[in-house]
Length: 157
Image (cartoon, rainbow, N blue to C red; front, side, top):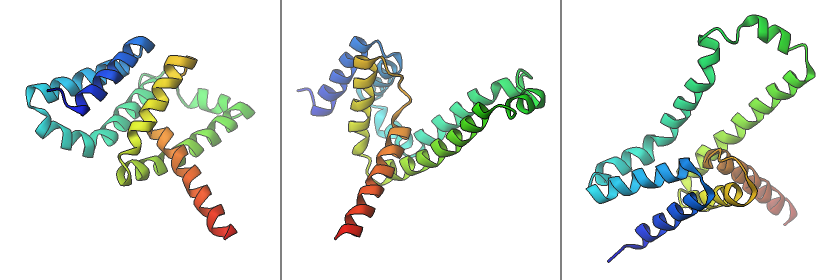
């Protein structure tokens, strides 16, 4: 008999295929392969505990490649800061990093929220041609919204 978890993953795989989301297809495929080969018992706890920090490290490495290759240097940085667009980008980078920090807290404290964040991301990619930036920033935005609701709920009554 197929488990509910497997059915859920197969639905996510179908949505990934329909939405042509290669990241989702790969993720579901890897997880199902780990589950079906019996390697999940060891891999899943590790991935759940260390997956986000590893992914953030890989993302950071990819963002830093233009610096290490010399494509971006002090000259480009000094030219960029003369533009107000650069200051907007700097503020946005700081803001997003702080929001994502709240996302890490939310995902650690309420991992079940990941399912709805992933579904929201999948829907945005499949239906609105969005870009899957992953559940971390979504969790950060959700965390900030939840804290705002808590604040205004406690202030009002």
